[in-house]
Image (cartoon, rainbow, N blue to C red):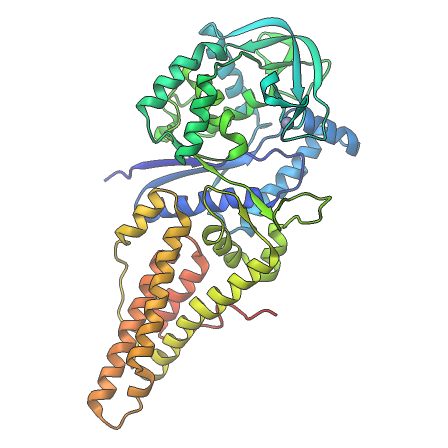
Length: 478
Ligand SMILES: [Zn+2]
């Protein structure tokens, strides 16, 4: 039987800075869902990559005195290497927007929107935030500044550019939203975008003059312009499937998109309108996560509170980093993360909780059972699936911890370690029976844990199969 196809993608991080924990969060969340969908039998297409055009990248490369392509090559490689450090599925597709096939796909997207009458040339004075790479309307400015980038001056520009007829799509988007009540998760983000669209849409420019900024995909049929970075980058979600050569996207699109709350508008309104214009299917769902703050403040270099995912990984390991991001960071709301919180969670729940249960059970099994307990993989729990279907990674992980606690309680209540030392053969048999039950119990835990902590899950399964206490799963760290 052919497997059901499942597509999911992260946003593509913009390569004007090194990878930060916000990207690590998004990719780990998406990776958990990709592993989960694979586990339940789907044929998964998982996409990420790097967004490499636009003014900020161009200026950074200029500043660094490097060739722009070489600059993006290096930063793109940093992101790609990070995937391994985060334990992301090796089958992931990694798309770079400077890739020739992607550039051709972006041009085809342009042609289709143009053919539908949605791209026109006009002169306009624009207010532009370089931080967002977006034009801003007056209502979006606070004291004349972008609220996300209060340190940057809003640029006033007069340019003749190409525009996308976004204004034409307000009604159509609202109709689509009404027909797809789960289009954006969580629903308060969905309400936010509905309000934005209801407020009326303004056309926005989708090109830049090449003489001012050449680092972009050439506009088809006009050598003087390059595409605006969003227009080009958003197309990656379908170009990665082999579109436009594969008109059916290889059967993978439409799919699920993960994005941060700062990306809500681009994903659920701009990109959606581009697809409507090009006559292509809209995404199935857009999942919006919150931000990671640190010590109560937005992370910033000047505050010195930036948490580097690689520092966490080096100290506690990839699996612990994944554990923390999946269970202790809220899937939708902002979460405050400090190194102290990471340390506490690691010690209490990995060293003491999971690590301790596995080592106690397998020590008893190794010492008292004649051979390995026979185990087989069985379908995962319905409640666990319900939580992951709703992207509640934290709640799904809590279910695993409920079973870890049950295991601890069973040991305390039935004291199998005492029973096996008894002179009474019935008690010894009872003790062994409980130990077998516990071994099956931790195997069952591993079957669910695999979506979050694949290496740890495999170590537990191997220990069960070999009837051998594993090396310390989590080393105590001071
Ligand atoms: Zn801004």
